[in-house]
Image (tube, rainbow, N blue to C red; front, side):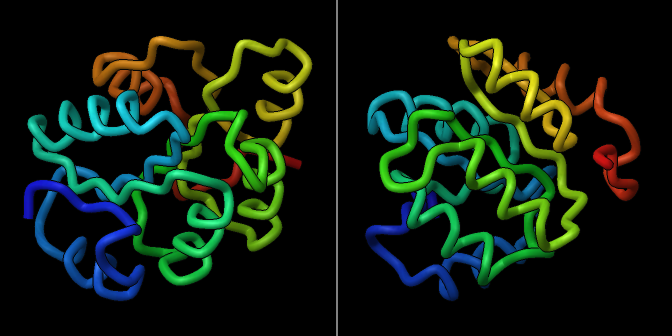
Length: 146
């Protein structure tokens, strides 16, 4: 399947699809459809499996249903419904250690996100930025927050 979005399949169905072999299983939350599709396309072209969420509600639903199924979560701060930092806080409340990249230009939010163990990136975010962030990340099996 070339293009996976939450709007076409149930989250449970998409999680089953993501069980296929891929470099990384990535949950991508971005409200801007064009930006989300471009980044998802680049990630897929690099061999990654990508589940797309267009708002905070879809992001939280995917996290709830597939907690241990993601190798990486990429989330923009300005998601409708649930901002990225709030989603990160809820994500970490479940003691999840999956690397989380929060995309924001806000210095205060970036500081808070780093305290929760997130990697922080600014726009534009590309595949190279993601690979660099993953390489800079501490062991993803160990929590980096207190």
